[in-house]
Length: 216
Image (cartoon, rainbow, N blue to C red; front, side, top):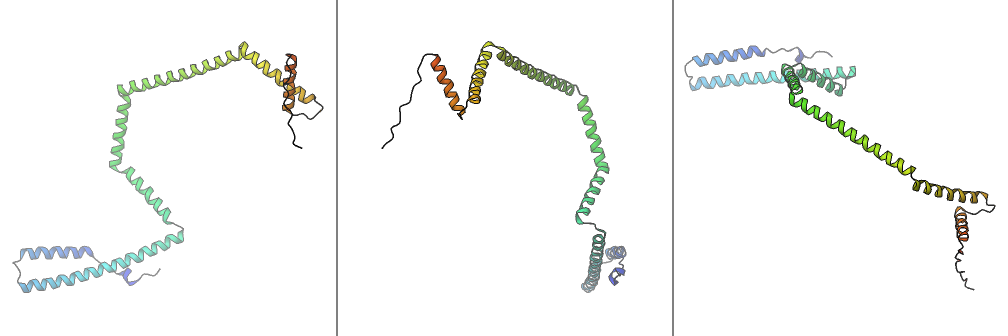
């Protein structure tokens, strides 16, 4: 990118500031000005202001041109705005961490933590919490052991075993009838036959359902 005339123009702002300070000091030592002198001074200031504003405009144009050129170079290099933001954030965070204020704050927090950790109150509190946690874990283990023991006692009791044998025997009987039957009876039919067989063995007659009358 070729340099423009605005790029080559240089403005000595420090020189202008010094001249302004010298003029102010000179006028402060002089006697009060007449109206004509004030008017002439006002015109000089207006001209100076116009010149300075023109230089500001030129500097803004130069700065805008430089910014556009820098953006074009970043685009060619593949640097995205997100990467710039990430880099700026990283640099800002690094600057904060390396600052004297951050170092002093971090050191103060470290000392405070060391004092709290080494205090008697903290030691007692930590010991009490550890003891409470151990007691809670022991209670949970005892309850679980007690429940497991009671379940084992129930499974080993005579009532449970008798019930288990009856249920198992009834299921095996029904299954044998379903498997050994030559007809295609369903599981419900086999269960009903088993119930009728048990009723006959007990001397009771199965209750017959009334025949449904079919209208002619």
